[in-house]
Image (cartoon, rainbow, N blue to C red; front, side, top):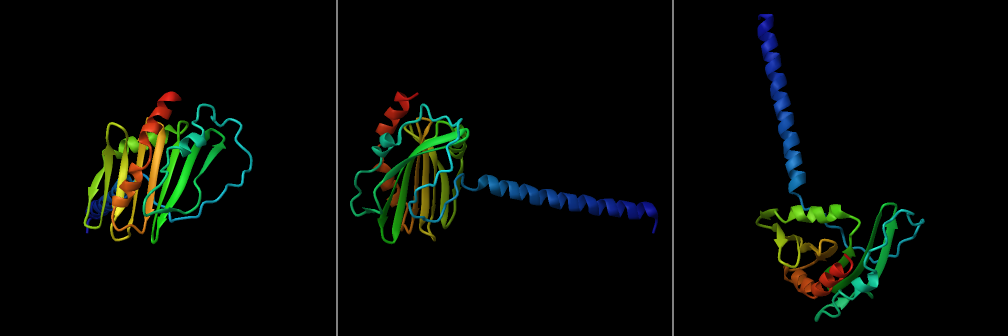
Length: 210
């Protein structure tokens, strides 16, 4: 066999291997891009954080105080009970800070966690949800799709075989409303909880503190 023939065959195999590697890399990138913006976490009990010291440059000024956010959470939810009293927090570390109000509703075996955060100092979160609006996937056992209304925009997902889902939206381009549910027969419970969040109050808070 001539040397040029061997060389051509070797180069052909190198090219094929490179092409295969490129396809694998492209597949991994598309998989990561098409996955939900927010990954679900397993239910966890409400815990207080042990502080190691606030970041001196955290942009706390201008954040909506968490007592105000607490007033936007559902006051009641027929058929559901609060796992424990709602609580609020101010978190600050270096160049990042947020205020949050959180509560967890249960109707065994179902559980829905509702959070409202002022993420004024984290515009990347708002941008992520802006991009998620354009996403849509429908399958036999789940759906993931963007949400856009005059009052809010974001993302929702539900996995029927697992009974879990989420709603993630932004109000006033700074208030992040998050619902995560587990043990649910359908996504209706998530939306029922979402409708009990006082969106009008959040809109007014966002406008008042701009």
